[in-house]
Length: 357
Ligand SMILES: C[S@@+](CC[C@H](N)C(=O)[O-])C[C@H]1O[C@@H](n2cnc3c(N)ncnc32)[C@H](O)[C@@H]1O
Image (cartoon, rainbow, N blue to C red; front, side):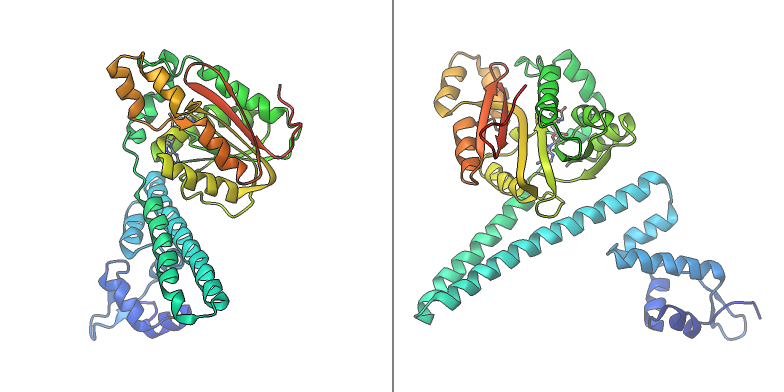
């Protein structure tokens, strides 16, 4: 008889049921040999190591199919695909549950505080449907520009300042200005988050100066390029609407050329998210395409040819007056200045005497 373990021994070893082991075998994750005379399963040391991996991957929620794929192809890209997918699933679930928890709190407060208990029902349904709506918006954001496709040529295109609008003509200046504004805070111990990190051009500046910076982006390809250029940069998949971090995690949040991929409703949700992960006294610095107001947009657009108007309308430039009002609701000071016709930098901070270079 070959050396090895039977199914009951394995079940005991891992404190799981024999049915679970049979299930993994049926799914092709395990392939124990069979004894010649009675067809009983025999598990080798290799099977044990494999089962250990399966159980560990299951413990972080990986699907059986993903595990099968990982075990088949242990290349770096394959691992990254599965773990990034899982990271996204877990993060989505955290956001979904947090929204539910928030609406439960509101619902319970309403019930506690309402004196006439049957008047309360409509209010409850409204709170719950608002929270569902919020989750739907967060989950429906789509990359209609296909940044994965653009990632490999992005840096070259920016240098060439492609596009008739010439929105990249001050690209280097804008990135440098954002960097200088953070430097002016005079602190090297800052925890910085860059949202929409792209190919890592801005994050790279901070990394090279020894700052603690993490870059998130919704595009895996952008993150791959950023990582190739800056191997030490921490990058994660993540979206403005579902930032994959805990409350009050960052001293500074920066972003360039990214916020205009959110429509107006999404921008307000993103601001709530940014404020959630920003520490008290934290600072937000964003360079992006903006108009001072809807009226100034009209002024600018009316002298542009139709093709350029369409290019602008394909994205969602912010209105500075609306952004200002949105951040002021959080008792933040808001400053902005114009870099060129369409590019602005905004600074959102606590103190009146925020020092700019
Ligand atoms: C034009 S690129 C700018 C990249 C980089 N910030 C720079 O200044 O070069 C826009 C980046 O924002 C990312 N992005 C767009 N919408 C996003 C969202 N909702 N959440 C996270 N990243 C987003 C894109 O994937 C892309 O990498």
